[in-house]
Structures are given as structure tokens and as C-alpha cells.
Image 1 (cartoon, rainbow, N blue to C red):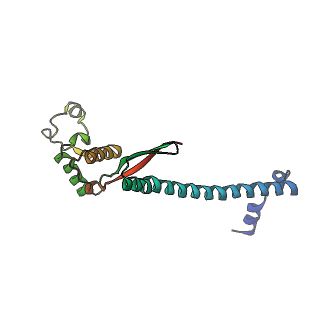
Image 2 (image 1 turned 90 degrees about the vertical axis):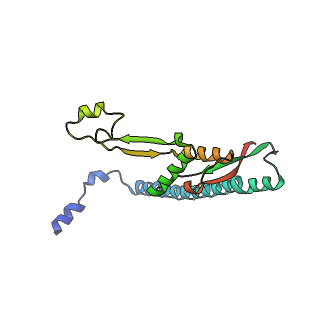
Image 3 (image 1 turned 135 degrees about the horizontal axis):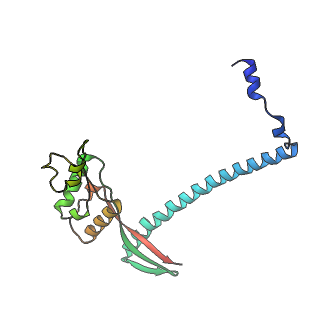
Length: 189
């Protein structure tokens, strides 16, 4: 970059700064500083909220259920708050194709194939429009090999695992990386 280019780059229209006085510059500086302070305070507040939520979850998922189990209660009322224990489930379908196949096979083996969503797609080439419209039941007879995509929605999987677990029916928790626990549910107060 030549000297002339540098001077052209830093040259500004003086009329753009006509309202910039020492007082206005100071006020602008204070406004920017205040905004930065709010950003810092928001970050601190968000960290505090995350900490409080983590602590609250510890009470609801560990401390209260453990103590209620220890004293043999599944419901109680304390200081106007009704507390009951509920079962919760965390479960996910495996991402690994082999493990996913095992999980799908397991669902079929225990009679839960109705919980599986399927997507069937077929690729047709040029000049196969009529064939694409007419084909439905006999794809393989037509020489086309469909790709089958199957899945179980996350909420559906959690419900299925919870229902089968609660009812004492067969379900392989390990296949679904499932965790079943007890959570305290508070109402009132």
C-alpha cells in the first residue's frame, strides 16, 4: 500500500463528526461502558441461574427421592407443598448402524415394532415417471431396490422404555443407553 493509499483510507468527511463534542464523546463512552457492564452482569447472572438449576435438579432427582425412599414415602405434604415421586427415563437410539440394527431387532423381538417409524424411498431414473407412479407393492419385482430408513422418535422411545420398565416387561436398557430414575415432583407453595 502506498502513502497516498494510506492517506485516502484514513481520510474522513469532517461533517460526519460535526456533533461530536467533548461532552458528547464522554457521554457515548459512558453509554458503551455501561452496556459492557450489563454484558458482564448478564454473564454472571446466567452462570448463577445455571448453578441454581443444577442444584435444584440435584434436590429433585437425588436428595428428596433418596430421603423419601429411606423413610418409605412416595407422597407427602410439607409446608403447603405436595411432593410425589415419579419415574423418569432417559434413552437414545444408538448412532452406530450396527448397534441401531440390534436395537431395532430387539424392539421387533419384544413385539414393539408398531413404535418404529419407517421411511421408504426409491430412486427412479430418467423416463421412469410412469413406472414411479404405478409402483407401490411390488418394488422388488420391478427391479428397484428401495432404501429403508427406520427410526423411533426420542419422546416415543422414552415413553416405550418407561412403560415397559414400569410394567415389568422386557426391554434392554443397555441397547438404548437408557437410565431410569425417580424424580420428586413438587406442587404448591
